[in-house]
Length: 133
Image (cartoon, rainbow, N blue to C red):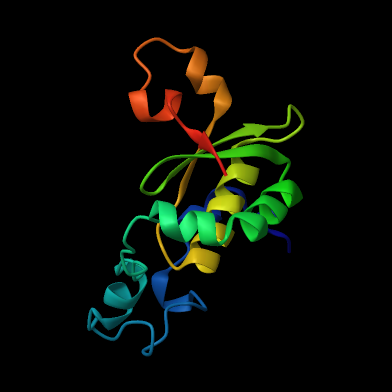
């Protein structure tokens, strides 16, 4: 007999005959499983922002790395902030992947801003005055 053939009887199935109603499943909940499942993932340690000296010391490696993600014309804006031209075919995921790789290279926090933000009103002055690597 299939489930469809049971019709209204399926709703009246006695709990005792349910295959999932076993003594092991009826044990009191200890909360450990919920604690393991609902705990937050550990955050990576906070890194200091990348200094201009560190960025310039690794400028060649950063430029090669950026090219892999479709980013060109890297410029230093301020500590931890770079500006670059992101190719039209690339998106925010490419920028995020570059930032992660740059953090590993410099062992410091790095954020990349597309040069498209320079056309927006009220842009931070350090982004406008960014200097090429």
